[in-house]
Length: 96
Ligand SMILES: [Ca+2]
Ligand SMILES: [Ca+2]
Image (cartoon, rainbow, N blue to C red; front, side, top):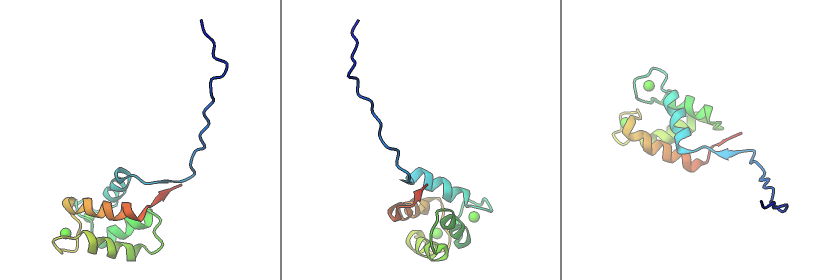
């Protein structure tokens, strides 16, 4: 039987903050659909961005809506949500 006394102990420091994954962002946006109609209104987007810790949630909601709202109905639907998630992901929101 071999015994390796030099087995390295791996102690990687845990990062204090990590960027939210697209899945985590999606979950936050889905949870922010307060009236559960499958669409995200500007008010609900504001709620989502405030949960994400945005400094000015109303501004982020407006920018995110402008970015993702392909059919210009003022709401983010399931198809448009992917663009919104990409937009939010690029902003690099972190969890602590
Ligand atoms: Ca809604
Ligand atoms: Ca839309």
